[in-house]
Image 1 (cartoon, helix red, strand yellow):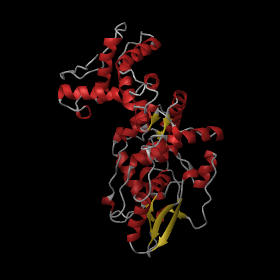
Image 2: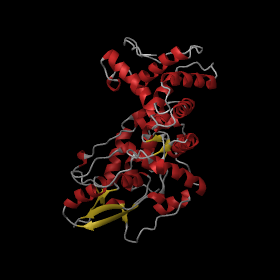
Image 3: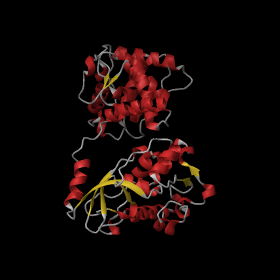
Image 4: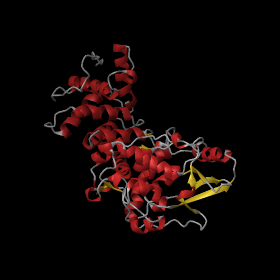
Length: 402
């Protein structure tokens, strides 16, 4: 077995105490998306490690996290899960059929030499370790960490703490760490700040862009497709079909684009995760085609998705969407009036209630959907429209119609 002896002495050779009987375990990849999310939500987001002292080993940190999970009893989210187990990063690369990273001969460090400066470093974000590293582990993406070696031979990991902990969880006992020799704890803080504070983090647009490209290249290379990449590429194809240009916030005229510039891709990804694909696609199509010469307003799509959610499935969706489009265009005729739709509705709500839509007990998309409902009942009465689900006990507002 490849787990460190200190770990196996507490949890069993095959992590029986943590994962349960081996015969009852299943691979993470075999779970449904709903079951994956249920289990992930049970993993503590944050595990404080100050109780381990000023300088715990990373092995002790893993043991501390495993103990927290075991103590959850039947709610332990790893119970019944077969974790991958590797002898080394090279073996992990071979098993997953990915190129191994070429580390220098002095870069791979035994895990029992690795420590954490608990007074200077952040604590453990356990859900992140499992969701973003362990359950999607790729040995070709284990980049060297950064640390400091003191005169006692202890190497303090100041960057890649979570990546290193993930390797230990998977049984890997040598990890790549580049370090300086110093007893000055200044470097523990400076290294962390240089990488985690002064660096430029990826924007919502960057994350979307790279996920689309990773999908394309992974498919070309025959590599596994990440779930987030699949969703982003689905949106990419829809936006391409509708002529929507996705751009960074503040870039209102990318490559000379006229109209239909989408600067809030994060909103659309959230909506796609929240609403059915059919409602998302139809709402996006209607929004783009009604207002083709203005910036793409994600809030309009949000309200349309919420409105479609309560409509009868017995009505032909093409006829329904046509009626919605005709009704909204009677109220907002100009092709560049996209910004007015959600703004006018929310302004009307505030005028009626003296409460901003963003601060109301009524969810913002429901307020926009209610405005759309009133427009549709006025200008497309041939459809038997259902109102959105308005919270009980809260008065509705009246949207002014021409």
